[in-house]
Amino acid sequence: MATRLNSVYCNMHNQAAVLLWVLLLIIGNAGAADVLLNTPQQSGRTGEIHTLPVRLEQTTQPVGTLVLNLYFDVAEVELVDITFASELADLGKETYSRIQDSHAVIILTLGAPLENPGDLIYLHLQLNNNLDTDEISWLLYYEASAAAQDASKMDVIYTSGKILILDQEATYHSADINRDRIISLSELLQVIQLYNAAAYHCDALAEAYYAPGAGEAENETCKRHDSDYLEPAWNIGLRELLHLVQLYNAFSYQYDSGFQEQFYPITQKSK
Image (tube, rainbow, N blue to C red):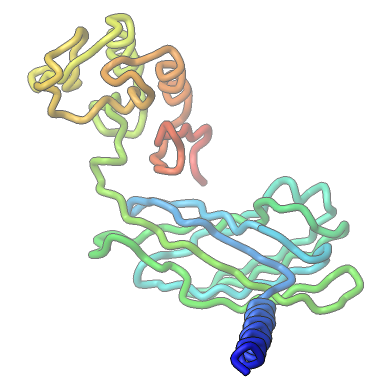
């Protein structure tokens, strides 16, 4: 009798497990979409224009047409421009965009179907000054639709990361002594001195706050130079110096915590 009850119990347990698995599968598929779009989390300074990509992450079939209606929080950001990824030119794209106050309409029609992941659209947002917050959710809500080449409807999900508000001082490169977001020749030469010395240390009396030569490790209470992002610490290597040369050759530079170097060159002036 006990054996029979154990057998019945095991069968009921297995059936319940299978039912739970089926329910989870149904729930998981219920939220699935044909097209997944994403704008990753960004870092930005108030008062500046930042470029946010709208990226195609995946699609169940090639996309022929994509329509986006985006609604922004005008108390925190202003949408100043919309541009399209240059790679779309090969697909015979036709684009339309309109900005009206807190609302943007974007229509993308492709001569050739879109199926590979990559950036589609760039939103150029200006963060309002004097934001009293550490992060903002710049997108209030969206409406999106898409169609395949045969005009069949495709469901779209668009996820947007927040913008983290950076401390103003943290976004200047250590080499940028006068804080104008340009690495001048004299500023580059000061870092070359640190590179040639094969070591450097903190010096509160120095113009650049750093001086050539090794210091006492226990006295190194300042942060490492921004050109010293690789190991070993307190030593600027050739690769690190060459990255600063890139910033010197550029029109300007911008901070982005997503890069290992944390700063990247801006090669042309924003319109």
